[in-house]
Length: 346
Image (cartoon, rainbow, N blue to C red; front, top):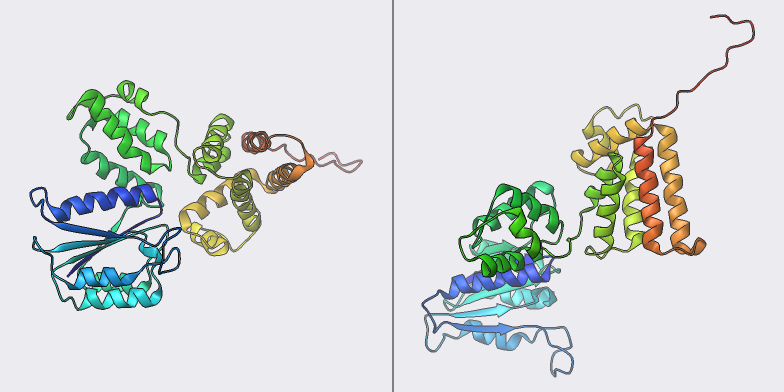
């Protein structure tokens, strides 16, 4: 028996990856392929408790041959709801199959129990990760791979505009490409001007877009990234504030640390990878101690304002705080003037 596992944090991306996988497994010409889908029980279902699988029908489907086709595809949606014991039973079928049936597991947001994940890999099955990845490089590679398979061709400028627009909302890619195909036709070459009317509202911005803009002293771009995080990103202002506090407090931890001489040293102190640690270290050195402390005071004030000290909308509180942080990055520290003792003519 073949086994497949589709995982990812975004349910819509997992759903699309599952649909593509099932189309691949069923084959365009085999209309008789049996596909049976199962998911956890819902409100009002009898038998298993709500949110749990009734595994009996699943095991029966896996262990019996299909009626009119060479194999049956058994799909378990929301496989993260499987208990450890249920995962162990399924793992036995995966490792020691009794039929040529195919098991497809889909888990969005939750991981399947480790025993089942290992069984899929050990049996030679395939794990499909629907997520674009966490790093900017991984996301760029994911986008390029999808655009190569797209029904329309975006020129270089249109690709850059699309990547900028999507931000963290990778799930919006396929609907935009489908709309472009419906509007301009399959195989069409799309320019930024032709793409723009199809984009709609901007997607969420990743946290580093906000911190990078602040560090560069670009208040306009920082506020734009903030609005995308609060709007399409769905982040609470206190979550964004926590992100900014970690960024600035990291600078304070490195400030004056004589044993921190490289990005690897900074990464060890901050318990993060060397690339973001290097950015924090370099920005802290540019700001200097006084401005780092001032930045923390700005964040402390914003925290008090968000918790009721000031009757402003939370979004406005955050915009003012972000603008002040960007201003600190732009400003040049004043040189310290030391008074000479009376009679000192040097």
